[in-house]
Image 1: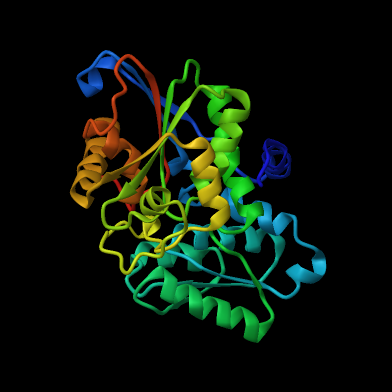
Image 2: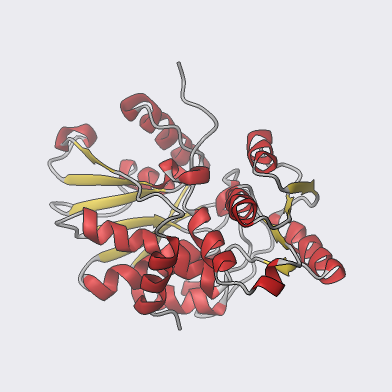
Length: 310
C-alpha cells in the first residue's frame, strides 16, 4: 500500500524537475455563496498537467540499464506528454500510443517533446493493449499512467503542496480517471490533515471508480461515452480502489455538458484554459453536486486546454 513516505521521497526526487503550481483563491461572491474556494492549478504544471509528476518519478527511479531500453506508454494525451518530457530530459527514447480520437494539439505536444506518437485504437484500453504488445516486442519499459506505484506516488506530491499552500481546508475535490491522482493525493493529505473530506468526481460517461466502490470490487465498464478523454479509463486497479475506499468520502458524477460549462466559466471568469476533464472538479462545484455550505473548499484543476478565447 502506498505510504506518505513514498510520496515525500517522490517530492525530494521531483524537486528540480516539476513546478510547484499556484493556487487561485476565488472571491466569495464568484460562485454566488459566502464560502472559501481555492483552485489548485495543475493546468499550469510543466507539460500542462499533473502527469509529469508521476512520469518523472518513475523514470528518475529506473536503473540505467532499464532506461537504455527506452520507454513506451498508452495515453489520452497528458500522461504521454509527461513521459515524453521526462524521457527527453534523460536522453531516453519514448514511444507514446494514443487513441485515434486524441486531440491533435495533444499529439503535437507529445511529438514536440521528442517522442514517437502512434495513434491506434478507439479507446484507451484498446490503445493500451497495443502499447503493451510493443513493449514486449521491443523490450522497452512500459510506464502505466495510473497502475504503477511510482507514478501514483509522484501524483501524490500535488497533495503535499495543497496542505502547505491552503489553510483552512475542509473539502478537497479531485477528478478521477484511473484513480492515480486521487489515490496519491488522498494519502498525502490525510497524513497531515485526516479530517479533510476528499470527494472524487467522475464523468457520467465513465463511472469506473463509482461503480467499483458501489459494488466493492474492480469493475470493467462495457463502454465509455464521455468526451473527456483524460478521464476515460474503463477499469481502475485493485490498489487504487483500496486507496479510494480508505480515503474518499464520496464520488459524484458530472455530465460532459456540465464539464463544458465549467471550462467556459474558468475561461470567462479567470482566463484559465482547461480541457474537459480538467474542469470536472469545478463542474461539481458549479453544479452544486456536493453540500459544501460554510466549508473551505479546494478544487484541483488538472489539465490545460488548447487555448483561451480572445
